[in-house]
Amino acid sequence: MERMFTMIVDVLENAARYEGLHESFKKAFDFIREAVKNEPEVGRYEIDGDKIFALVQEYEPREVAETNWEAHKKYIDIQYLYSGAEIICWDTIKNLPAGTVFDDAKDRYLYKADSFAPVPLMAGTFGIYFPEDLHRPMEAYNGISPVKKIVVKVLL
Image (cartoon, rainbow, N blue to C red; front, top):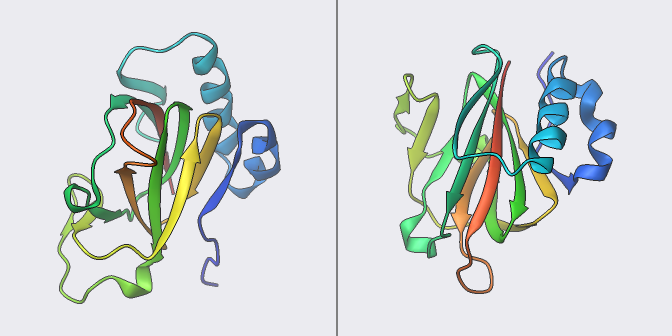
C-alpha cells in the first residue's frame, strides 16, 4: 500500500501526537526537547547512528531567488526552529519536473522552481517532510532575521 502522508506543521508541545507515525519519531522528538534546553552548538549529532541523526544549523534566511527545492528518498526530515522565522514552501513530489536528477550521496533532489504553498515556521514550531513532500527551506519571512534550527533525519 502506498504511504499517504503529507507535510505536517505544528508546535513542539503537540509532538507526541505524531510519535506513532514512525518507530523513530519519539527518539527524534526527545532529542529536540532536550537539545533546545541547552542551546546546542552547530553541527551533526548522532542519535542512533545513520538511522537517526540531527543537524543543528544557524543561518540567515535568503530571498526566494537564492533558495532551492529539495526532496529526499531515504530520510524523513523533522525541521524544528528554536529561534527566528522562515518560510518553507511545499509541493507534492508529483510536481517534480521530469528529468530532475537525484543526488544519492546527499539523499536529495535539488532544483529551482516557483513556490507553490508558502508555510511559515516560527520559533517553537516544526515541520515533518516525508519523501512525498517537496520543500524549499531557508526563505526569508518578513525580512531577514537569524534562524536557529534542528533538522532531525529519520531513516525510512
